[in-house]
Length: 262
Image (cartoon, rainbow, N blue to C red):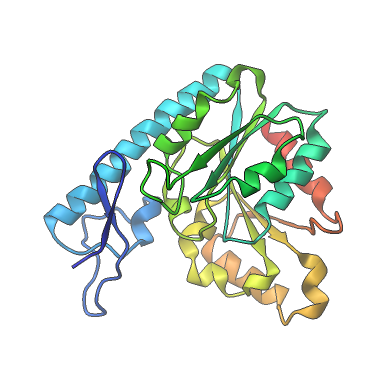
């Protein structure tokens, strides 16, 4: 039997892997971001639940998208594994672009305000979403969670909204939140095989930010191998190599963000 976790709207979601001799049902759309999420057990009920989850989320995402468009706000869904450097990158972004664009942040975490506190005082309004409070402790932000934060942001006064998703290399990539673009921060400390192990994430994004390149002299990380693995999963994705610590590559990241606004 699959292990379900429940959403605030009463739907259920399972992540258990199928036994080796079983496959995901043909009726699951493998072109949907969830298509590679083969951990859904067979059976009409399970497929119906999956369709309902993503159907309701996609409708909520469309509503968010209309709100963003009406306010003239561009939205970046920023994802990564825990500790890859999203918050540190966001901090540098706010420092560098505070005179260029009016930026707001939705900070997603299961618990605590630690990351939101690190971004405080840099001129950007921040709305914190703890998924443990009313959202079942989810390992991702979905469209409804993002919508819950919008009332706490002055959308009409923003040019750019950056959503720092919950640190996780699986679920955040599966949920449309109404964003214009998706980017992920990948740390070289994670290993060059990660695009092959977590293809849904690497396939879903428009940009991969390769962070912590200042550590390359101390790691057995093969950048060429990483690029081969990445291109096998997402041949056309843009890549920016940078180090938040040294500042190398940060100008390219900020330039990429500003192009979204044009």
